[in-house]
Length: 230
Ligand SMILES: O=C(O)c1ccccc1NCC(=O)[C@H](O)[C@H](O)COP(=O)(O)O
Image (cartoon, rainbow, N blue to C red; front, side):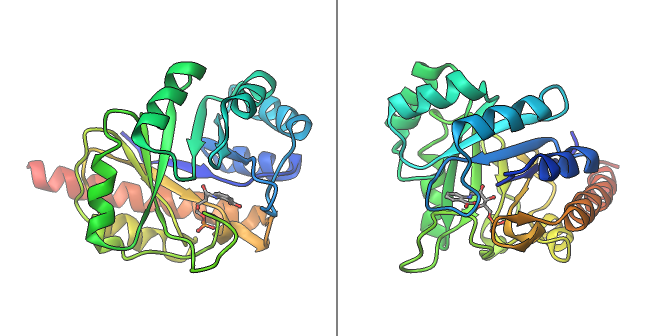
């Protein structure tokens, strides 16, 4: 299975088109008013319609209540809900049950203890997003352009698929993929700041370069996997 590429924080039609044309598998829409990538329901509906049939649409929220999630689901019809706050495993399970949409839970990783936390979401979440933790006092729970030590999740094999995120860029994503490795549950990579020219402004050239770098690194990873089987 090829690694998936998610381009997150798309807020214009041009940015969505750039991600789709580059071959992104998922696009992320951020519903968090403090973010430079925040989209309102009207803009999100338009952007999601543009992506439909070409990529999966991920609606990202932070500790949203059911009414807010319901409004997003009704207006945008996302394929995924990404939960990027302090949602507990019970809350993640309840959101999945109430809204009937697969849920991707983001978990911030800075230490081996954080990797242990990931296991507590294995029943409730459909997919995990392993991201860097925000800087102390930071306003945004994600989208900070900061990597974590990828060696903490090298070779990680989970019962649910996981995506890698945090500070990825066209220049470093191949190294991240090489380090995290060939585990079957490593499903893809996610990027936001690393394909921007300024906070909230996606750069089509960097989006293309990112997707191309992932595809090349994934092909090399496929060769490594074959070599291990042979
Ligand atoms: O991107 C945001 O502004 C954002 C705001 C609030 C919560 C999460 C947010 N982004 C989460 C993402 O999915 C990012 O793609 C992920 O954290 C990686 O970001 P980056 O390190 O900037 O590539």
